[in-house]
Length: 71
Image (cartoon, rainbow, N blue to C red):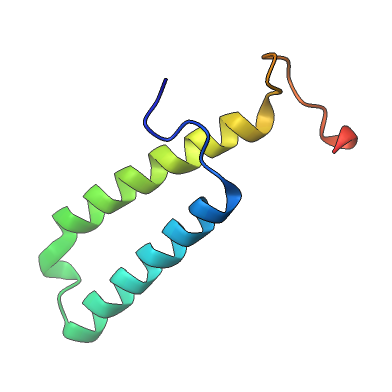
């Protein structure tokens, strides 16, 4: 199992908003270019969350693919 398996829609939205706030603060302080390594680390974490959410929302609990017309 992955670190973010089972991530909820709410949690993913919260993390995306958190990332946006962090970027905004960095920009306001003029730190964006100086902290690219930190930004890339945050993006990697966010990417893992999005991937886990996408897999969770694509497949049913029994492993079969979810037909979007059913939801």
